[in-house]
Image 1 (cartoon, helix red, strand yellow):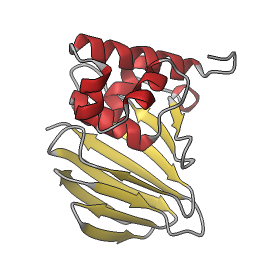
Image 2 (image 1 turned 90 degrees about the horizontal axis):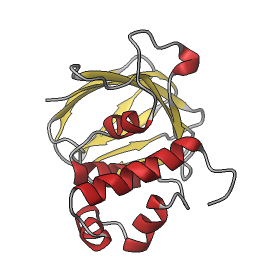
Image 3 (image 1 turned 30 degrees about the vertical axis):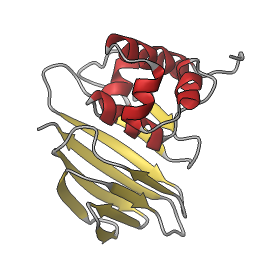
Image 4 (image 1 turned 180 degrees about the vertical axis):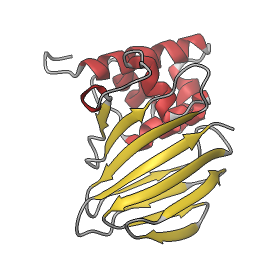
Length: 189
């Protein structure tokens, strides 16, 4: 670990190690459940690498959490009013995808809001939902977005809203030429 490691990455690495040991799983067992190599998991837990959105998606599915729940566990406690400059932001090192937790998960609440910015020509694929049946409402604010939900492709233009419950695979693709900016409302079943 070097001195330039983001504090959020350090807390995330620690939390991932806690979840694995708390579940009584070895690195090999988690590797099998999440379909991630043992060496990658080890490096993640030591904060030697930053997780991509795809890796976090696989880990969240193995632990039965949404990505927002996992990130909220390592971020500061959210107040009722969360000013824009206090909203946690995470960037996927592989794609440049920026995820702002506008209204993070909070105890006793089932919904949350996330802002996503996916660069032009970038894509993210998820093998399955972290929580089966997760209700999602995606409202595209700018750019174009191709969203595949359980093998059905949806092409969204600014102002379009796609509502769905996620049971299977999904993929986000920005065909360009500008970043796709959207709001995603997540509601636990």
